[in-house]
Image 1 (cartoon, rainbow, N blue to C red):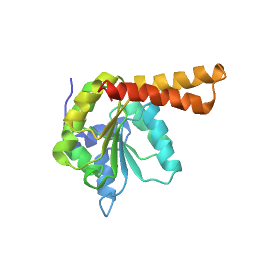
Image 2: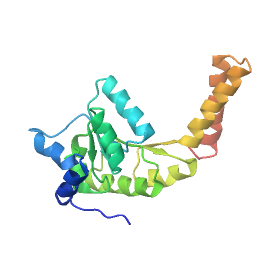
Image 3: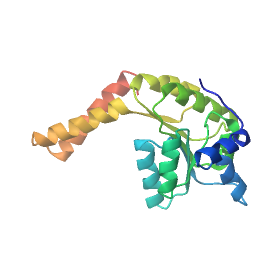
Image 4: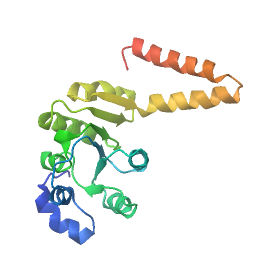
Length: 192
C-alpha cells in the first residue's frame, strides 16, 4: 500500500538502505533551487532524461521511490534522491516552487495522477510534462493539471512508421508528412 510520510521520518530508513533522501538536498543548499528541472522517476526513460539534462548543462533533481534506481543514479554521480513525489514536503525539498519544469517519467498511471494533483495544490503555475503509456490517459491528466502529456503509444507509432517507411525507401520529408497526418487525425478526433 502507498504510504506518504514526512521526509524527516524517512531519514533513518534512508541511512539503513544506503541512499540519500531529498531532505538532505534541501539541508545542504544555502539557497533554494531555482530554474531547474524536477524529474520524477529514474527508470530507463528517467535515466536517459537525466543524462540529457546533465550533458546539456541544465540543473536538475530526480525523485525516485525505487531504492535500486536511487542507488544506481547516485553511483552515476547524478542528483537522484529517495523521495515520494506525492508528498508536498518532498516536492518542496526538491525545489518545486522554483522549478522550470516538472517531468514525470514513471510507469504508474495512478501515481502520475496523484503527483499531478499534489503539484497543482502546491504550485498552481508549475509546468508539468507527463509521459503516459496510453493516449487515453491524456485527457484525465490534463484535467488534473498536466501542462502537456506525451503518450508512448503515439510516439511509438510515429517511430515505427518512420522506420517502416525508411525501409520502404520513402524520403524523410514524405515520412515526416505522414507522421504529421497521423498527429492531425488524432487531434481532429479530439484525442491529442
